[in-house]
Amino acid sequence: MFRRADWLIGLGLVAALVALFAISMTLAPPPTEGAEAFAGTDATVTEVLTTEHQAEPWFSPVFEPGSGEVEAGLFALQAAIGAGVLGFALGSLRGRAAAAREQGPG
Amino acid sequence: MHIAEGFLPPLHAAAWFVVATPFVVHGARAVVREARQSPENKLLLAAAGAFTFVLSAIKLPSVTGSSSHPTGTGAGAVLFGPPVMALLGTIVLLFQALLLAHGGLTTLGANVFAMAIAGPWAGYGVWRLIKAVKGPTWLGVSLAMATANLTTYCVTSVQLALAYPDATHGFWGALAKFLGLFAPTQLPLSVAEGILGVLLFGFFARVAAPELVRLGVTREVPRVQAR
Image 1 (cartoon, each protein chain N blue to C red):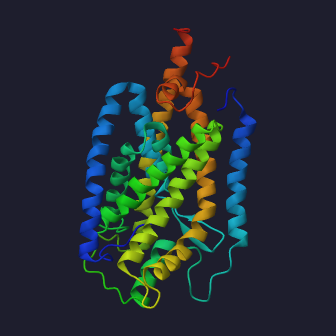
Image 2: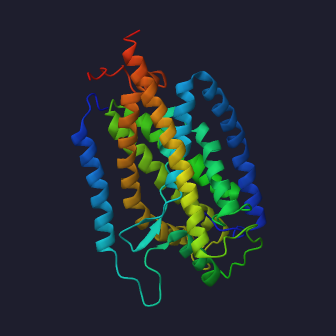
Image 3: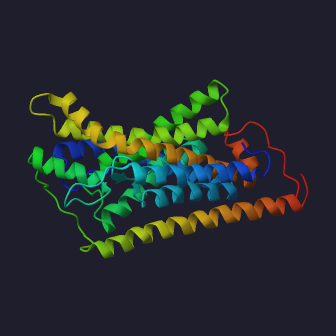
């Protein structure tokens, strides 16, 4: 894909990502009175199920974080574990590639 | 994509478990087989799993004024084929069901089918299609990632429509309603995931070029860059 260290392409892609979310944030319609901005679609669907279909959950979660603060922390923990492992794997691959290059081809 | 705990009727929940289980068992065997191949494979597997783990923890805003998750399951599907993602995705969903009350144990089968089975297979299908017509790698990767994400939410809509058909318009009416809730939010996120996938594979191409060739992702060893 990138035969050379093509930093410009990389930078351009990152810029495109930032632009995409900047546009999303600015174009998004303002939340209706009392509603949370950028509500999760999962939660919206659950709400539709309970109001329009009178769905009653027949099982409740074994553990609930209880507060939004704790929940945010646990989400951060999930991201941190993932990012840590991802960083370790990519770093190790890079180290291996560098070591192989030093030994020369073959 | 996460159907909340207890919101699928018991019969539906059980049926999705029955459908998903063989894929996950098959996936577990695929993960073990790939991990034994080489240390680099182990690292790439870890990277694919961790990528999904990070992405599904992040809710991203969308133009519609609501937010949703990327899934990140397309990357592993392109690298190793879809079976490995059945296991890796299940681990992610189990973590969220147990610790975050996001998704649930009773709906695990359905959620696994949407995110860890249907999404990766659809993404893989697009990847093979682009490769068959000799399209560029970056195009295949980004389309595979975007398709895996979108398909996940389409399958969730089908699952919800099957369980909660519309009173007047039946299954199709409900499907249109749930797709209408998910799809507009998901589209820009799919594009973002496609871009992120190109960045990830650009890095893979620089540090694990021989592995990518062996896994059949790229054709020849890219020229080793001079330093």
